[in-house]
Image (tube, rainbow, N blue to C red; front, side):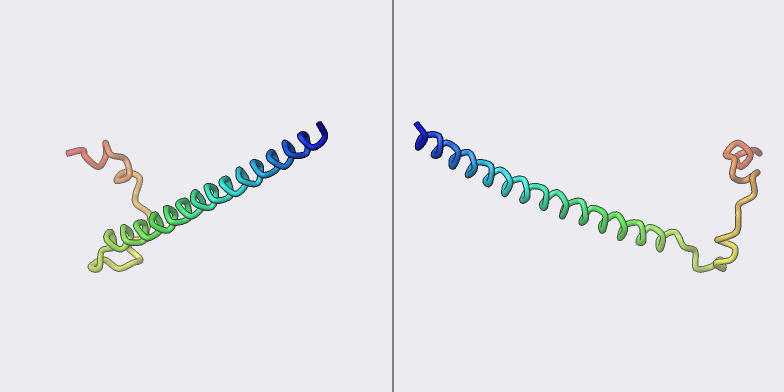
Amino acid sequence: MVERCGKNIETLEGHIRTLKRENEDRIQDEYEKLVEGLRRAQREREEDERAWTNPVLPSEILQEAVPGSIRTAEHFMMV
């Protein structure tokens, strides 16, 4: 009876080790996908910023606050 219990405990410990290893692999894979997604988003954001820059206008004008009358779509579209 004691030997059988010992074997069951060993089997259970082995199963727990297997689950831990599988979970570690899965978590590591998810982490790597998350990091890659963040890197890709950062690259896209940087590329998007470059695409929207206007080389004709000085950066001071581009950084200046937009007047409230232009910020509001109704005012901007008034004829």
